[in-house]
Image (cartoon, rainbow, N blue to C red; front, side):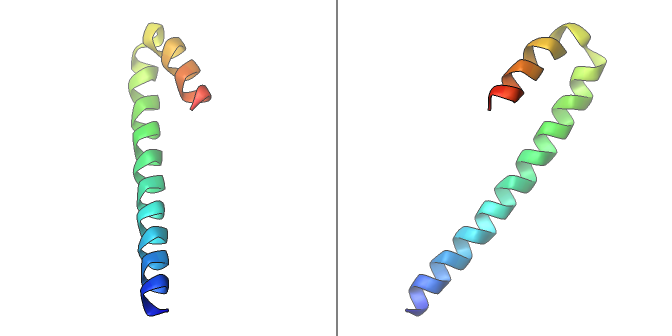
Length: 50
């Protein structure tokens, strides 16, 4: 029983951490894309798809 809770807890933490890094990555990408408009059109389409 304890192990199940522990694994669930670890999973939640990892999931939150991944979401945080994903948000950081996307916001960094958006900053990069604003600097390069040609690239931005392609990448924005890819970001929308994911």
